[in-house]
Length: 107
Length: 115
Image (cartoon, rainbow over all chains, first blue to last red; front, side, top):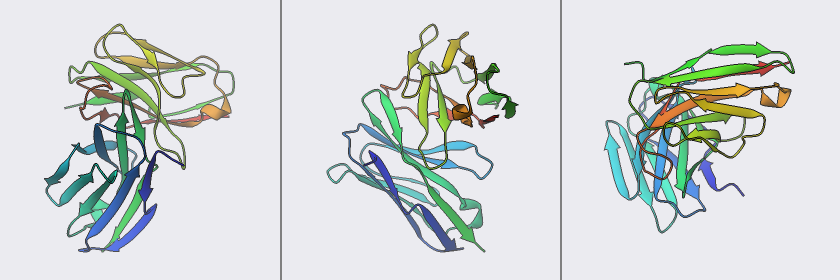
């Protein structure tokens, strides 16, 4: 069993839809990261959180430490949101990455 | 702002050849990392450098060596390339090391194919 699991693996949506990507982890953590990998391959850090909720523009990230679960929400999705979204958790001295959720948003 | 710059972007090698992947950051970060990304797997840490002058093995260090040349630059060397090292390699940096909760800034990646 992977220590960091994301669901779904693939997701398609119509422009304007509300998107939810889930991340569950099995290790004790101090922080969880959400990253975005563009179709060209570049990786950008979106959020780092250890409790509660963070919001940046149309993106919202939440974490439930007791349930070992985090969600990334995208409101009013747009084709430019098409990317792979990666969850990573910090376990002591290393980051453990999920395999990513590939999102495609169609006009 | 350049951020993290990796060179080259693409490379094809023959088995047994050697090469060095270069990485430089202009954010005055203390910590730098090398990851590889393979299909169906999450990013895996090869080596990291918590600060200038120090390097440590990550999850998959075999077949690689690194050099933290100065605070800005962290290179990854393949001494004798093997087909199993075909991958996309990412360099990243952060203000604090793995023990600190700081976001990592990634380069654009190097796509390496070994025939």
